[in-house]
Image (tube, rainbow, N blue to C red):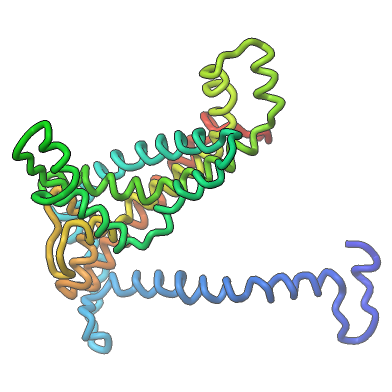
Amino acid sequence: MSTAESTVSGKGTLTRSQRRRRNFYFFISPWLIGFILLTIVPLIFGFLISLTNYNGLNLFNLDFMGIKNYARAFQDPMVRFTFSRTLIWTGLNLPIWLILSLFLAILVNQKVHGIGIFRTVFYLPSIIPAVGLVWTWKVLLEKNYGLLNAMISVFRPGTAIGWLTDQAMYGVTAMAVWSGLGAGMIIFLAGMQNIPDELIEAAKIDGASTSRIFWYVILPMLTPVIFFQLILGLISALQMLTIPWLATTDGVIAVPPRGIHLYMIYIYEQIFSTQRFGYGMAILWLLIIIVFFLTYLIFRTQKSWVYSEVEG
């Protein structure tokens, strides 16, 4: 700290460093207060609820159960089944979303007239509300009157594939991937435009083909962005609820098809349908722990595949 910053001009006067610190906390206080009240406090409250038999009505007459809800979760076959479906969902959605987002980013990274229009069009699905998105796709994927089955029926008359019932995993995957492509494209595009042109020009001068430039120049430089997208995509896929629920049910009490019965849907059922708040919060906290663990594993592997200009 400089002499000017450490000198107090009068009694009760703040130094420049103290004023900066005060202003910093003043400007972040709206976010900080919201984060504490809307994230930290609910997490702590939810964990405490998971240790009780709370059912939504007995807040002042609770029985402390310790880890019984957690022990019960490990014996619950529906927990194992829905988590396995969630892993399949994640393994199906995440790679497709990453690859298609990168492909779109490459597509809209071209320097052609009117490219901004195409970027806007590709991004639009990301800002469509989930309800509108689902109902639009239902028109396309409905079993008996959907446009997709109608087109397939041209070649195979009588086709009635249950894209939202028997094949719900694939139908809902198409919805989820399509809804997230715009956001993924924008982030990849930002990463591509941050790659120095000198690297690509040098590769071209050395005689590298377009495919070699992509694999040995562009892709390695994009690994930090891929790492970021992988983390966000993993967390989003593991906690997916809205799109599968709306796409495969007709009301809040209806049960989705077994093939798309994801972990978050089971949590929702336990908390809001059967009023088992304590048990529902317990299995939710198990998911939080799993997400933290998987994220930690990805962070541990980043040194072996994520390019960084900073050594260490």
